Length: 219
Image (cartoon, rainbow, N blue to C red):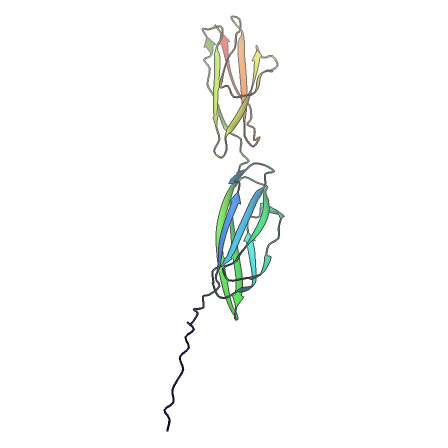
C-alpha cells in the first residue's frame, strides 16, 4: 500500500495584526482670547497592515463652556483601510477663560471585535487683563517734573500697550499717551500743584485692565 503524504505549501503565512485605531490630537493655536477660535484636528490611523477597521467613528469630549462652531461629534469615519489614516477637524470657541482639556475616543471593529483608541490635548482661553503696577509717588515732590513709572505682566500672552492720563489739582483727566509701550512719563507742574496720573494696560488679545492711579504735590 502506498504511504500517505502531505504537500507543504511554499507560500509564507501572513500574520494578521489587529486594527487598533491610533489617535493623535492637536489644538491650535495654544492660546486664544475672547471670541477666539481653536482648530482641533484628530488623526486616526489603522495600525493593522492586514485588516480594515470597519464602522469607525470618533467622539470629542470638551468642557461645557466650549462650543463646537464647526464639525460634528461623534463623526463617522467609515472603513479605514490597513495602514491608512483619516483626519477630523473641529472649530471650537470658549466662552470663559482658563485651561480647557479636550479628549477624543475612536472606535471601530473587525470580524465582530471592537477596537478603541484615544488621546487628549488642551488649550488656554485668555480672558484676563495684564496685572498692572503703578509705582507709588511721594506725597510731596522736590522736583517740578516728577516721573511717573509703571509696568505690567501677563500670565498667558503679552502686554501690548498702555494708556496714560493726567490731572492737575483734581481736574478732569486728559490723555497724555495712548497705545504706548513706554513705562514712564515726566510731568511738569508749578509749585503747590497736585499732579495725578492714571494708567491702564491691555494684552495682545485686547483684555484691558482697570485704571491705576498715583499722585504727588510739587513742594
